[in-house]
Amino acid sequence: MSNETYTSTTFLRRIHSGYHPEGHVQGIAIDEAGGYIYFSFTTILLKTDLAGNPVGSVCNIVGHLGCITFDPDRRRVYGSLELKHDAIGRGIVSRTGRELAEEDAFYLVSFDCDAITTMNMDAEVTDGEGKSVMTALYLPDMVRDYSETDEVSGKLHRYGCSGIDGTAYGPVFGESPDSEKKIMVCYGVYSDVERTDNDHQVILQYDPAMIEELGRPLTQAAPHHSGCPAEARYFFYTGNTTYGVQNLEYDPFTRTYLTAVYTGRKEAFTNYPLFFIDAAVAPVERELVGRGGEIGLLLTAARPTDSVSETGGCWFGLGQTGVYAFGDGRYAFSQHMSRAEEGGKRTQASEVILYRLAPTSDSVFAEV
Image (cartoon, rainbow, N blue to C red; front, side):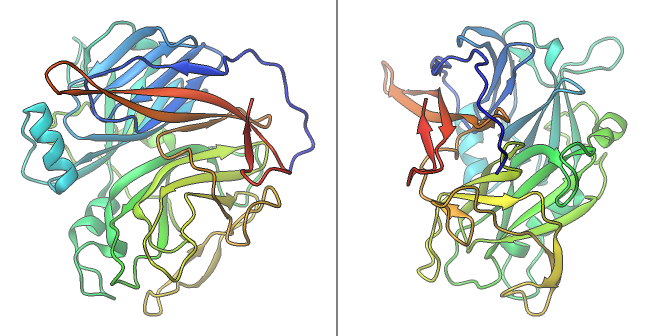
């Protein structure tokens, strides 16, 4: 762990997003220099100031906008977008009243942060030059693994792939913290205790420059296929989890990737809600457990505190709906909130709570 001390950068201990009639919060991203927080509410991207006051939003997202991450160099928010027809996709269609195209499609989307200046901007609208506040990079690897049958189990969805969710902006595993940053995108993984081929988290690596080159505005009723294969595919052995990595976040302070999941149900595993991947260790090419002899790039678990297990897991209960690492031992975790409104409809909110790393705490983190 780094020996740096905590800074006194101003950040409120609790920041409330306000309630919104959308899906629950999927992730957060913070622009420290600009003074903004971004919230993914499944079908909208909300931008607020650091007091939680709304500044702008992007709407008309028909699919599942998941975890988001901020790129301070390009001033972009990246996120995972699923356009699919499983229970999650059907639920979104039912709630929004919008129809999806017949095909299942998966994208890494990029939002132009400085262009988000008003509420309810349309994700599909382009200006006179063909530019949009949101562009999308098609992910053929993800589409293939979601739609094809696994060679090991003979069941649909290779690796148990349910789509994508967790995203992070950080260095390649094993390379210097100051090296070129990449976008890491995690598979969602269906919960299935009968399979033995679904016990890894799967992470794909992309170059952000590819979004600038190949990303296009997206019409969700007619999804485009402008994209590229992943630069690399990594595996992290945790046991099967429920819908895979919900949030992924690179932490320069501990040189780890925080990996938040909904816990798994296989009794053979200790089903932690939060894992740490060692970003300082290069992946090792070896046979993957339960994959019938398949060879893959395996990542290494990290133990940033003594409270973290040998497998890199801990019992800290937040992170699944958003986490941001400041890089100085402080972290912002999203706590999902929901309430019933008049007429029985529910609205959703996030309370962003400030924590610090607490090496002597059994909880690993302590509220500031």
